[in-house]
Image (cartoon, rainbow, N blue to C red; front, side, top):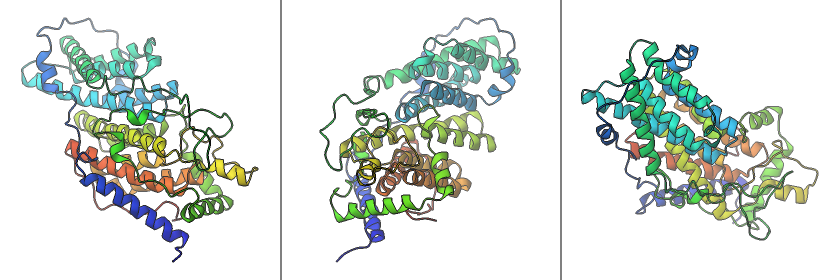
Amino acid sequence: MRFSTQQRALLAALCCAAHLLAACAAPGGPTAPRRLPLVDPARVAAALPSSIPPVAAPALAPAAQSRWSAPVAGWVDVTLAAIRLSGQSPTRAARSLALVSLGMDAALGAASHLRDAGRPVSDDAALAGAAGALLRATQPLLLTNPAIDREVETAAWAGFWQGHATPEEVATGLALGRAIAGALLAAVADDGARNAPLTEQAAPAPAPGLWSPTAREQLPGADPRWGQVRPLVLPSGAAARVPPPPAWDSPAFQDVRASFRAAQARLTPAEIALARRWEYRQGTVTPPGAWFATARRLVLRYRLDARAAARVFAVLGTALNDTTIACWESKYHYRLARPIQWMQETDPAWLPPLVDTPNHPSYPSGHSAMSAAAAAVLSAFFPADAADLERQALDASRSRVLGGIHWSIDADAGLAQGRQVARSVLAAFGTAPATPRMHVRIGHRP
């Protein structure tokens, strides 16, 4: 019996879902989360020296009344600017965002414990101490950049200038935040990220269906061992590995290629615009940063207080970090060829709408996985926006197929993977996922 293209695609999606559900049920699968938090705020607060020398307040900085009126969102802004400046890859940007956010969440928790023990402390300063130290650790360009010192000073003293903190409370907050950052960095010191190579030194010999450097610059594979970095919640990247794609020479993959070619031949201006809107190449905030920007808008729209906002970003950052690890583990495990490799063999004049194909294997789609994870997490915190968030995730996923840099199966597998990782992370934080979820397949026009 011969199945149609749509039937085969549906079967592939069902197989993907079944594979991930089986992984959930298996001991040590992706729903066996690590114990959170990574840092015990109460213990860090209790270990803080009983006397912190106060320092003199600096002159009032204009930013104290603008960026630092919402300090958690302000530190997200600073982190996104650093990611743009450094040109970080999506994998490393996700880790930076996760650690800064987890540090802010823990710093506010530690400040609460300190106040319960009768020691006044500035939340603004605790956030500044933690976020500033974590940014220095995750953003190499900030190690010698004095701009971060100015940001820390302005953010730390914002509460004093606004009339709700004393110099002593600022000094205590800074020391507490830095202690939180130190404890968090110690907890992830052996996760493998520090020694993960930026590019692949040696790749398998070229073969049909196997990824090799593509496009104009022939760049080697990016972050080839990021899938071996230890996640924050998942037991490993391989625990959420997607099922294998169809064999390259199989009828199923022949249909995938035929569908791709047909879709590329009839692209509309609106579809090309969608692909470009979601491109987020290196040198931008990257896809994790784009979803942090979306979360920032929601946090400000709903006027969440600092504790609630920090928790949103902590869960979101953890989900994006673990999703990128799982996605890159799958990418280099399967090493599936990009569409451009096949298309330029069969139609040398063809170029994808997104001219620079990313320099890593095709399957699954990173945009799809990260967007699905982010939409699931944010839907849990903002259920009234769940439908819109899901549409954004589907747009991001579909954009990569329309842009000519992914097969439809890459998008489907990435969406399933991201949603599964998000469920594991939400469970680890004790946050219930939002229901119901829209079910719209990539590869079908709405």
